[in-house]
Image (cartoon, protein in one colour):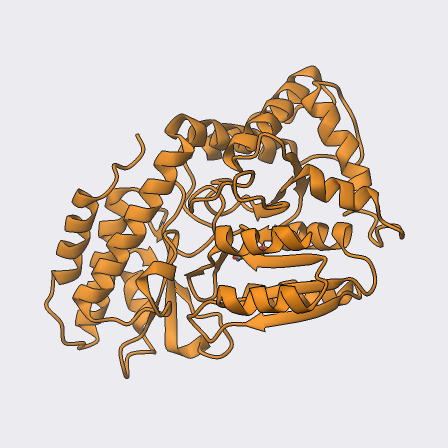
Length: 393
Ligand code: PMP
């Protein structure tokens, strides 16, 4: 693989060189005062990333799926009703996890590329006593962004806890945990958080911690139990050493640097930049004549795109794009897997990355004989970027 290939899949992504470099520093002891300071300040700053001063951050070695499992197994007891708002592959995974923990799972599944409508959710919440509702903020299999604020507002009056899977959203899509009254937001390091794979991150509201404390049964998972990790996170935040499982020291260095960069840019600037980049990709799809998987522009994510292949062009497209130095991802949603491809555009993405990606897509389409006006996508992107938010410095 060329070292100059641009990795434009929906995670892992291109990481900032300073984030990668810091990982090669000598590994500190996990209870050393130097590391306690680094981990403690990183946890403190994560509250600003989630926009949740009252939330309790957790950072644990593992992937996003572990974060999903932690959220479910700490809140759910056998027979509890869990409502899964399912917008694709990762909604289905959440339902599978909740089933494994013997919840009574009800799933509202959207048509491919669409969202579950608020009226359906309200109706179900009125009829059934739902303990936990889960929402995938951006389902990476469709590029559909859920209306988290609206759905969470429906859950609150029913006393239902809201869990948001932000793996493909946190750090890029607008998200305000406290204002939107979300109880757990979970994510992973390898997307807009901007750190190589290996960290599961959660921000847990006081209400969710109370629900965990009020359990009648023990958490049926040793590693995932908040009871193991809460004292550790609290100790680091109080700048005291503590141990349950060895933290991934060098990945925490990387998280420290990445979070510092994110906050220096400002969360509002990051939200605006990802919105602009999302609009730029949508403008390119229209200009080239490719159909998006999300059925309306308002529900298309800012951090990734999912586009159907033109008729007859399925095979050979991704390798042609790769020949032009850009790596894109194949489809993932089981119902349409072979009919579309995905582009990740998140984190430290630059204007140059956006233009290079569209240019490589145009080159591949031209090579494969797709009829379109060469340069139309690049022009649309340049225009959308000029009209939108500035890239964070
Ligand atoms: N949820 C979403 C929305 C995701 O995109 C992913 C990963 N692509 C996951 C959960 C699972 O994360 P991981 O692959 O890190 O386990």
